[in-house]
Amino acid sequence: MSESLRILFGFGRFFSPFYSFAMSMRAAFYKKGVFSQHTLPVPVISVGNLTLGGTGKTPMTLFLAKLVAAYKPVIVSRGYAGGAKGEVNVVSDHHNILMDARNAGDEPYCLAQSLPGVPVLTSKKRIQGGQYAVDYLQAGSVILDDGFQHLALHRDVNIALFKVDSFLGNNRVFPGGDMREPLKALNRADCFVLTCVDDDNRARAEAIRKALLGKFPDIPVFMAEYKAVSLTMGEGSDIPVSDMTDSLFGFCGLAYPASFQKSLKLAGLTTVGFQGFKDHCPYFAPELKFLKKQIANCEGVQGLITTEKDMVKLTGKDLGLPLYALRMEMVPEESLSDFVLKKLSALVVP
Image 1 (cartoon, rainbow, N blue to C red):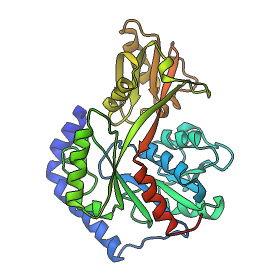
Image 2 (spheres, helix red, strand yellow; image 1 turned 90 degrees about the vertical axis):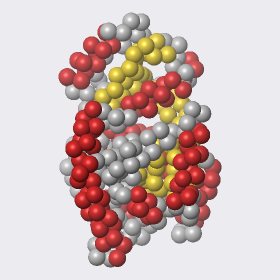
Image 3 (cartoon, rainbow, N blue to C red; image 1 turned 120 degrees about the vertical axis):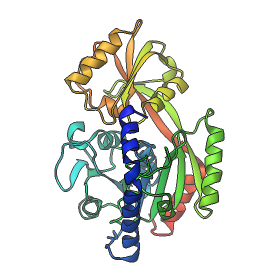
Image 4 (cartoon, rainbow, N blue to C red; image 1 turned 60 degrees about the vertical axis):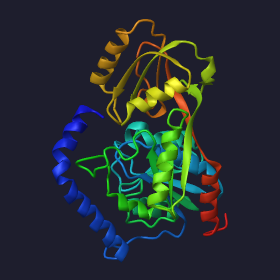
């Protein structure tokens, strides 16, 4: 946890009960119909989490889009940190990518790059994005990226993710902790997925699964690993991870930079230095100057390695060394695929 978050959570601890109460009342008003909820004429799959920061929502969205391809999915994202200001912004349609990373936001742009033929939209009001997908893009289903707290739109499959190494953080609700809502909000979920499971934390993952099933016995818990697929240089050329023998300097702009550093280690890559930046770092001149200084302070650096969502913001910028992105793939238990497809088949025939 960064020092700034420690300070925020320390000062915010007093206000946590008030925010927790407000979020509970909001959820109750939606449940009782005081606040209206819009229902689309196609199935809606929501991917989200209970905590702040990254839990693997975008990789899970990518996995689901491929899984439910027969249901003609359209992805609707909030487009965090993207510059586009429209009520609905079309990042990609069935044929082309129509926006750059700066306007789309790094995560929606990465989804559009990775999913040719699957439209990606951004919209702060997911109702508008979902309805646009149905009216203009012939959506047979809608996938909400980061939709667990977006209660204004009814969802048919509600997936809540937890990163194994961080789980619930300090177990307090914002602004005193990492949780966006109190724990009872998880009753809305149709299933839980524990992400970033590996050999180092598998025992912890099993303990978390047992705890969740004890608290929510009717909600299944699945596990998902990350698999390093390849290294990409950003212009469509990929190389196997095993072919990389250079000494690399790693960096990323994630909520939990240590998780990427761990991925590099598990992939068997040799890193001689590492630098974390704030989540969704834009890599303007000051960040690039600082990064180059950190690289210069390390001996033997032969190349740079970052995430795919960081690389899309570095197009055209010269860092003085070859730049690679580690292409990762989420690999959940097969039972998760069966669960989601069974849910959808009960709603519509693809």
